[in-house]
Length: 298
Image (cartoon, rainbow, N blue to C red; front, side):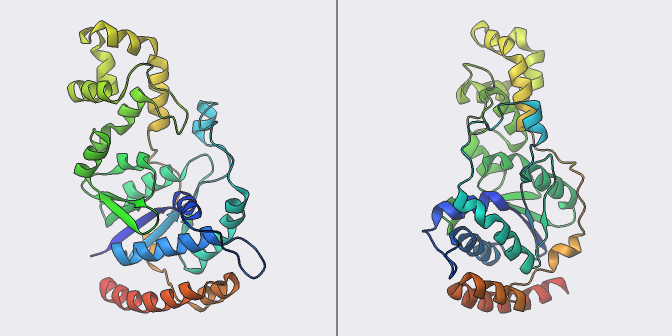
């Protein structure tokens, strides 16, 4: 069965950086994040058996969310210099694997992932790999999310049932839920005084943020007063939480099937990086996956 895996590149790279001990190449340049990213990629390929792979990346430029809400993600610390120095080399590794790496100025990787999932889900099974729970709003009968749970080796596949178990609401109401409770990690605030229990109860009864406000007079005063007071914040939070599915990016699905783990350019790059153990792994896995991929694509 054909399967497209969409990887949230920076989310996985960031996780790899914090999961791996310090590593350097012969030049003394840090390589732990790159090493961890490749290890995770190999694990994804072995566990999920994709025929097609795309990595989606964030741009340095502000997104439409930063422009709409000045304090969006303002509390986040700057990227560690040791991690930042490994980003471009990671992109080189992805390119060496012949895996497309897609980004778009003004949008987050989440939006690119949402767009590609929407575009291809009726043609091929889609699995998104990320550590970001916001992506769970994209889960449906044709899209699943694989999320690392501990370090790099353990992960869980999320469908609709697993998403509800994790967040308390169905995937299509996650943006509505976050519009009510806010998101401290992205620094937007939802409705003051509305917590997860109340938000889930409201959405169970009224099915959407819009319908909650349409029925505001039916809601008990101690809750409706908070909703009325912070309506502007709720609507802005909904906009910030909603993943865009129409980012202007183009990519042939065939290009996502050309990945190759053990090409000469990969082996040369790994020699430069000092990845001897990974070189042995990619040779073994690459040979196996080349055979499987040829059988699948026939």
